[in-house]
Image (cartoon, rainbow over all chains, first blue to last red; front, top):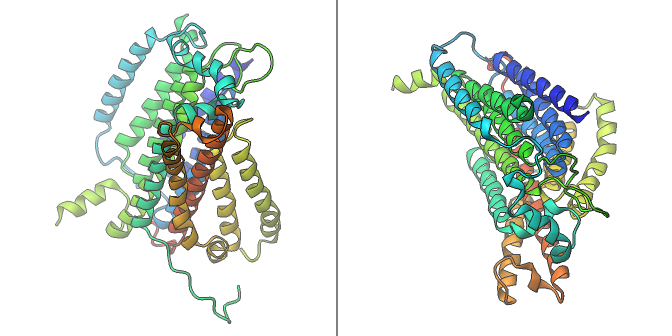
Length: 184
Length: 117
Length: 145
């Protein structure tokens, strides 16, 4: 059952990605991008990743889309038509890279195999020790905030730095003083 | 068939290649940012599908013996998603300023204006 | 947006629910999916919805940028401060065991404070970024190529 759901979602995702590549109307691309994020959030849910699906839906379908829309009001609505350079070199690069990666994935363990190496070293220890050492049910929060808390500190600093960068680039307009005759 | 066992990695790589092609072949800056995000999401899918355990459930501890999916890729990808949105916000702010400075967001016109100085 | 009465009414009803849901996700991140990031993003989405429907001026009046700017740094300060507090109390940096009388309670307190810091920073930064983008005058139809 979940296999069918996954294949369905993956097919839709591929179609959406191809549509983003081919379309010229930037507004349609933004809407398709929001759809892409929402579908990938659905895919993460089917793959038992609840926290990740939550974050991807909120961030991708929410914040990224609204920021792209606001950027569109300040730049352009359509991509300029025509090829400005030959597409042969990018195609060659993409095919070679894709072929090498596909060849490399032939050795990866089967999807869902409980004996895969990724499930052996630290993960079972976190799953077992969370109840006694930390005592909260959500293992992802426990690992994020306690076991790997240092990484989360760095990540929060990255968000702050991005905010500082955007403020340095764009700046916030000063609010006008409230005028008595300014009734909206 | 081997493909049926590792189909998730294959599709993630195909999506990544579509995103990569969008970034390197299209000249419009907003489209490049969209392609970059497609690439990022496909990499997330690669990692999350590695953490799936057959007959497993969400890694939230409940009563009784249960098999949980691996929480470690979830933690990594949570960080990656947030860093991705930070990068996208900065890229879009740069696009707004480039439009203000050059009057266009097509890469080819920007290069032409730069070379004419 | 003055003429879109349906949008105004629905937004007025939805925005408090969204903000409340953000607080729920923040503090119940221990027991279900959620945590600091998700809560921060949902809170910012609520404020952005309000700004979209009622105007940027109303949005900046409700959540002034002069408060958001230091608040973004306060979140990271809270996170780092918890680490320094554990250092002063005798443990390693960000070792929550020493924060309370009992290691498990210490972990609970540490995780609560740390996720709160993350949520505050994410909400403030995303709201500030939206205000920065939306504060620029939009281009007219002819200027958009």
